[in-house]
Image (cartoon, rainbow, N blue to C red; front, side, top):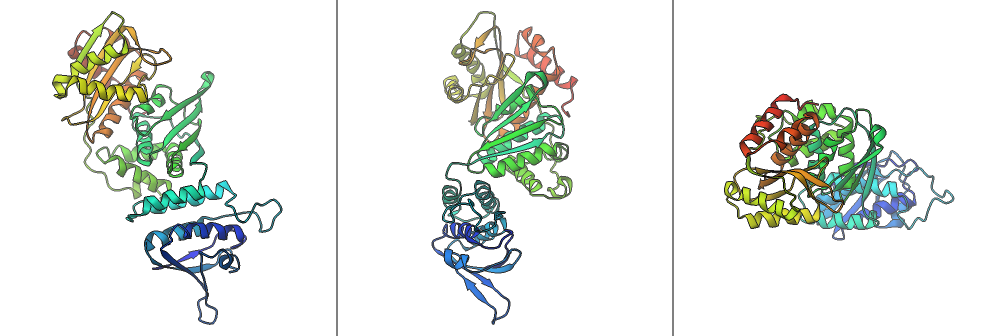
Length: 436
């Protein structure tokens, strides 16, 4: 296999760019590489990129086009990786500059991160059985201190439920923990953490949303954090265009949606023009409350959870003890208290037909976490397998309803049954707009 590539680092292939190229080539011990200079036979010169001295002494100049030839195991992935690294490396320091670093070490974190990000990007969608092992080796060599990426974005407009849910999809798609930090007037700096294995963690954005024009620091942690941070930053700065596309693609899978957003982040000219055509959208339906538990007596968290699981046993046909164990496991890893007395415990990946909820109304409050926050309204969810997107849409809509409908808490406190709770929630849903 062969391809053409161009060197972009300003001072040509001196010692440090050569070391990066060799490092990437060494990820493929069973693959042979040649870099060929010169078009004519008389000027043709072959360089072995696995040899540091051969690269260092090659004299390849900035802006020069060369041919990369690859053969052996993993050749398609190897060619993509070397070309990506070759064209990504940009070292501004002139070779030999005092204090510029040891030529035997990958001493520039920004360059290492850029090269690693380029490898992640080109590997997306490539079918190679060794891809993940090779990427893991690349992470060890290029990002030895772990992978954390920080970017700053200026929010184009206020969050809506649909784009808040999109951030959770991005976190899960790339397997990254995401932290957003922004200032809310006199309230000071607010911090929101989005976890890939907690579908409700993004709701803090809707409960205390940043204003349009706010500067948001995006911090992503995980092996694919460079990709996640870049997609997030582009989405935050282009919310209106992203939302326009999302509203026509509500039935697409989470991975398809994030892949399209990643294409937008790579600089595609227009989300509307370049994303796939919309599939037939189905209207999001707020799930019916099928279980209800209310008491004026103070109860502890375990009793509240057990009571709500018992309420869900009949409509889901799942044993209450099984539901309770799943909910408690998730609560131990990440308590689901949100803010202002609202909690959303959930059991996921259940073999049930549809998303089912039970509502707990506790006028004395339930101590919920180590900070002794009290939950007064508890929405317990039993989530079917492969229904994460529907669940995200539901909790985003739920949070939006509580933010925009000031009297909703008071009305739910007066409910005496599941039917009354459904009537109140339906009326609130119809009364407000979810578009901004």
